[in-house]
Image (cartoon, rainbow, N blue to C red):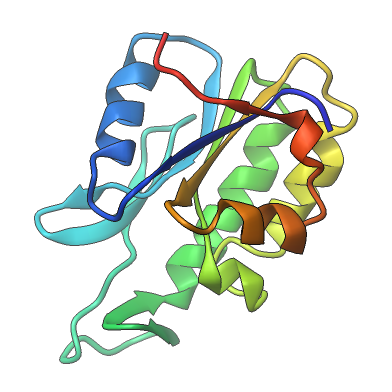
Length: 159
């Protein structure tokens, strides 16, 4: 695994907002971002710009729901995000962002199993730089869980 960059920070610290701005000024940036839009988490496909509301209220029904902490997420939107990820990596982009990897993926939910497939494919995509957004304090757990060698990791900077 080469060209893996980690962006880490606290919850709601602006990681995604900075990535949105960074990606807007570049071509060849694909993947999935999870911005908060109008107070709700969404998934946004960087290739198409399409966005879907991921976070749902207790009163909102329809589709299957994943609960984690005080969040309720729509499983169908995660499936959509996984499909977009697997489609987009096939274009051999210069940059590929996965926002974010954490407890749901440890349970095989959220962006899994697409994330693991992206890791496997990244072995073959020598020019693609993979950016992983990981909540502060979870980096070692993510690296261990997905067997990503620490020696292959670089810190992502907005340059």
